[in-house]
Length: 173
Ligand SMILES: [Zn+2]
Image (cartoon, rainbow, N blue to C red; front, side, top):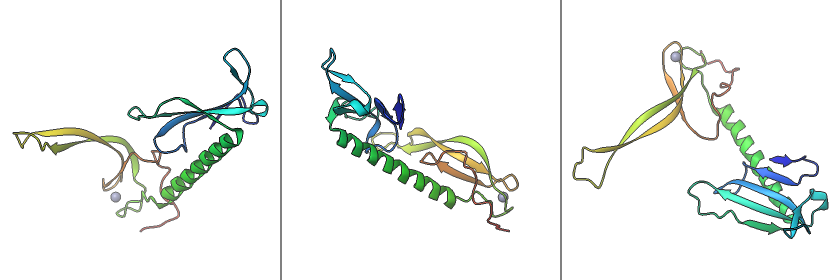
């Protein structure tokens, strides 16, 4: 949540996480009647109503039209976003705790190699040449044991890489 110009009494709140499904970005702005365009943007404490603009991803059919909200609807919207962000952070914390980077051969943490791109082939179903494949690259975050070379891979997801490391208190030897 990005409050402009300040959190205590914002004129605008820009949101990029914790949004409803399909929404990538949203802005809530605070308004009152008056001004040359009929309404003007004011600090929340002076506002009569709010406006919500949601935008979707590149292939989302969502329109970017602004929707008028009452101040309490805007407050509820922000509270829901806040709750989703907290849930997401709890989930990230849980998953961090569940990930174990320790190699069973050496009892040491695997170290982060970076992103490896795997070329994956799919046989085309609608072709006269069954050997023909279409290819795409699947990116994976890779961790490797310095001793035995065994690897651990993660698809892009909610966890940020490199991971801080699995539970260090655990002793697997
Ligand atoms: Zn190892």
